[in-house]
Image 1 (spheres, helix red, strand yellow):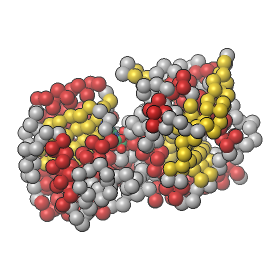
Image 2 (cartoon, protein in one colour):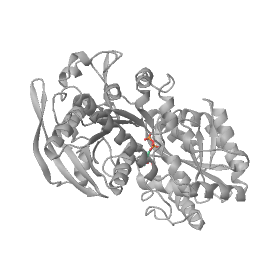
Image 3 (cartoon, protein in one colour):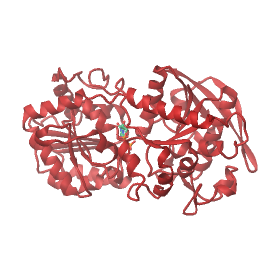
Image 4 (cartoon, helix red, strand yellow):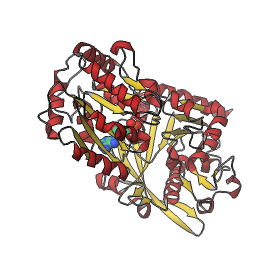
Length: 483
Ligand code: ADP
């Protein structure tokens, strides 16, 4: 099968979250299975710095707008792990400080930026080879689906080419003013409530959901949740209407990046059978954070996350002073909402013996926290898939999670420390604190704790099975469209 992936992030070139890891690992696995996979990514400034002289594949792809054209170059990013990566280069749109926003808000031309990206991918494939299927990710690439079924409707080469949309987070939808229809040359008759309109805005993700041949999301539970008002962010009705074509496929982990037996960023390697290295990693982490005096009996609690209310930081803030009375240290790495960046930094200053907050995006530090912590905290209000709890399991770092989305599907708490982690329900910080107390009580029972770590480490969340599930979805939509 020839599959074209289009997304706004892909590890290692451009990453703000789990999307990047999925868009890197899934194609790799598909390529290993024998499929031909090409991935298209915007040529952001950060990508251009990493790959400054990418060879030109197409010199000038014309992207029409109402009263002018834009021109995209397609650059060759090379083949990595069997996957051919291409960059869409439109300097005036992508040669910027960040991917989506500045501290004062989203770039005002995001509709044009990602509309251009989407159309460039479609046009490029007409020259470079029309795939059997497009697999597009999140709102930033969702317009590919909408364009294929509207302005490209009469193009014979795309008639039988299906498109699958994966929703990595239904909270981010790409809302734009109505005139976006004209900017992107989309027909006004699509600006209706059953198509792209949503509360008088053009909603990119909604368009993708309406027109995709199949929709997937990154865990089974989240696929159910987004069909309810609590999690659908206003798209629950649209999603329910597509429920026959909506699939929840749990994210995998790329164990060539995230496994303590081979991780190049951590102080010592270890495995379920040979755990000694984890102590060394813990020492290394505490040393790096100037917490050398912390004893073995103290539990190190780690957090690596976007700082956002979605991730349950309000719960953490709520219990923090009470948590600090326990025999723990809390180590947090993240960035995002300024409110939490400031508040958590202030809180860490109030507890210099027991808490560290690092406000930045730092992949090496993320690996060190996974390896060096005893407990990983992920009390998300909602969590489509969640990767860090899956990484934590492999690193023997026991997760404490809220039972939602992918966290619900991967973490199991059983009596007497018999599961692979600790879990709480409801929107109540007290039950989070209870779950942490249960984790701490088990931590003090070394034998039970070690068994729990080893159970998690032995679990296999590699991409092989999810990739097979994606292939089944691909085959289904290809068959449906050809009949
Ligand atoms: P989301 O995509 O919602 O942010 P996930 O758990 O699916 O959450 O994936 C987050 C990914 O981003 C993980 O690979 C995690 O290690 C990484 N990550 C998040 N914040 C940071 C950070 N500040 N520094 C380094 N890596 C981070």
